Amino acid sequence: MPEETPGGRGKTIQSVESALDVVEVIRQKERAGVTEIANELDRSKSTVHHYVTTLVKHDYLDKVDGEYQLSLRFLTLGGQVRERERLYHLGKDDVEELAQETGEQTRLIVERNGSGITLYEFSEKSITYKSAISPSSHTREAIPSLLSGFYPDIFAANGYRYTRGTIADQLSEYRTAAFHSNPYVSRAYGFDSGFDTFEDDLLLGQNRLLALAQTALNKFFFKKGDFYARAEEINERSLSWLDSRDDDRFFLWNHYMDPHGPYNPPSKYNYADQELSNDEAQTLYQKTIDHPEKITETMERSSASRDEQSTELVVEIVDTLEACGLDPDSYQLYDYVDIEALEQVCATSSGDPELRFTIEGIRIAVTPDTVTVLLDESNTTPE
Image 1 (cartoon, rainbow, N blue to C red):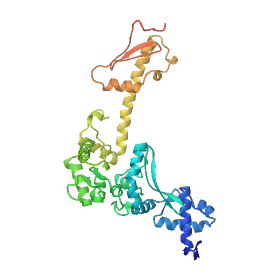
Image 2 (cartoon, one colour; image 1 turned 135 degrees about the vertical axis):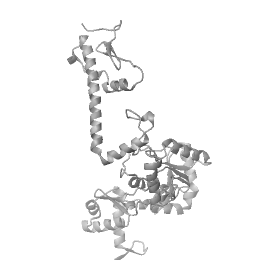
Image 3 (tube, rainbow, N blue to C red; image 1 turned 180 degrees about the vertical axis):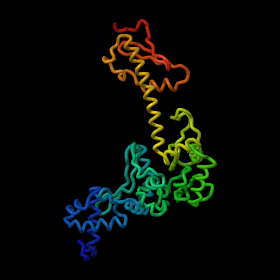
Image 4 (cartoon, helix red, strand yellow; image 1 turned 90 degrees about the vertical axis):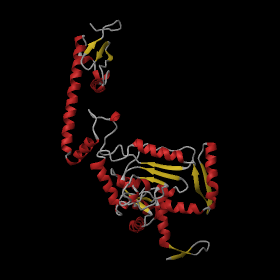
């Protein structure tokens, strides 16, 4: 029922006030469950449940692990309110200049109903996040969340088209650009929204089916195993764009596909015993999908072979040291040398490398073919 407010400011609706009370409790606690909110407001859990369910339905709350938190909708509303404030536009540049001059975080604050409201804040220093959790291992589910903060199911309901404002839409005062070659985050799915420059390598237009068809043709026929632009190419394009700018404020999104299936790195980073062609990499990648058990068997055989080689090297070193009078039970070989690294160097280095190290006073040299004791003045062989 409507109630008269103190000070004669008109009547209010009790249910709306109750909903706002729920929002305020969640704001203060950052995240809260129904029981916690009900206890804080002295309301029944069933009543609070109706309020939070309604707020979730209208995208004002997010439910996470059985608790509720404010949604990003408040950020959108706050951004709209801030944009209408004349003081924000007048003072924004001064706030940034002050932060740059002092090296401190600065704020532009206005008073509303006895409280200070931050319109804008800026710091000369930035924060680097060293860890992140992706909502999915697939591009078409993960990237929309990365650019929006929303869960993938919102976009799945719309054929994975990007239906909300991107980061670029929010950074209208910046020059923005994106460079990549993945159809799932292309113009065909609406990801160019807000970008001044957007290069996605689509040659057949913005239709989703044509975009996927182009990728399939490249994948299986024209550029088999190498159907995405390499990092070097993406960097070249983006650096060219950066050189063309005449202002300091920009947002750049480079989307790299090198660490992606089929994974076929440049030769200097290749982990295989022999360099793979793009065709071979694609075939191997497809085999991991269709017949993963065969890949496992191959890896196990390869691992067993390496273990056998490593074991032979360990035995030869131990036998050599024992011939010098060193009891195998009196030391731990792995405390002195990384056997796996030693074996890898011997197996992969060109020429005839010789690695030297000392174990319990005995200096030895290891080559791909021999293990020998170094006899010189500094050698102290146990009797």
